[in-house]
Image 1 (cartoon, rainbow, N blue to C red):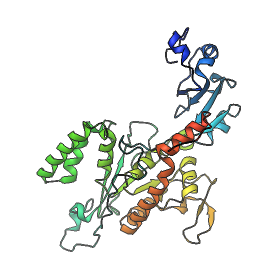
Image 2: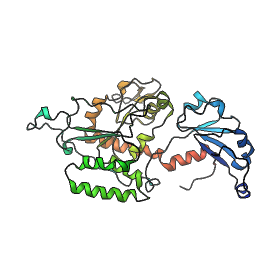
Image 3: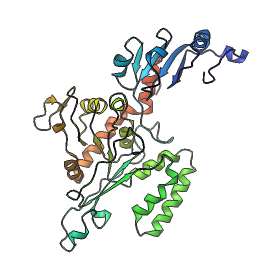
Image 4: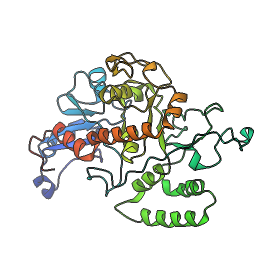
Length: 355
């Protein structure tokens, strides 16, 4: 299909007929060829993923192609006359972890010493506590400001930086190119530990069961909290997914999630995830369980912590522990097995699953 010009099939190809063919973010320009070879390719499905602009309804023949979306709004709002289904994206991980029920490793929750040290000069310690053992270590990863859809890391001001270290990691996706920078930062003046970690990193990158995915998880586990800001593009807020959040939840590190837009508000309505903050008004379309009364109520910005409140709350080990436990339950619905079954149902599989 990618050749855009299928004119014939070899005898061997003609014998291997399929029940369904899935096209990812792409549909051939010559739709007539899809019709010609449908007896070979079977039912056609188009997985839109994040192509919100390049695939208008007029380009997708309604009688020939069914569409798969990430959220429940895109179909009725953008493609109301097409046949469609909704399948979320599973979490990113690494090969050895993909089909495990539980993560191989769950990092412990550290105690943070936030007591005032009278021997410290407050004027020289406004932005960071003197050591990581007395600081809440937070990071945002995969937040590339050069992309117009990203909202950037929430700012840290002098009023909330005491006992907090916040790394806004704005790097390329190839973690092998920059991981050592954070080894030095994490282990500070311990050169022996830095050398050992570099050796471990080299082995991981050459291990086909671990690789890049595990390197990201290893980076995540250097921190006490992973902050996941929302995207800032209107269509991303409504039609995108929570893959970034659930991927980081799978690492076992407590995730502090920003809520903004339908995708995240829907997530909060479904799960009442505890560790969440808001910097923007809500849509008014969703409900949430009140932290005061325990009853369902309309979701508003005040339903969540402010950014400043969230940082103070995340210093408490019991809060991080509760969010870690809750997240590890939530991600079971985003495992490759769970999402794989849902995807197979969406493309017509009606049999049983032995997994």
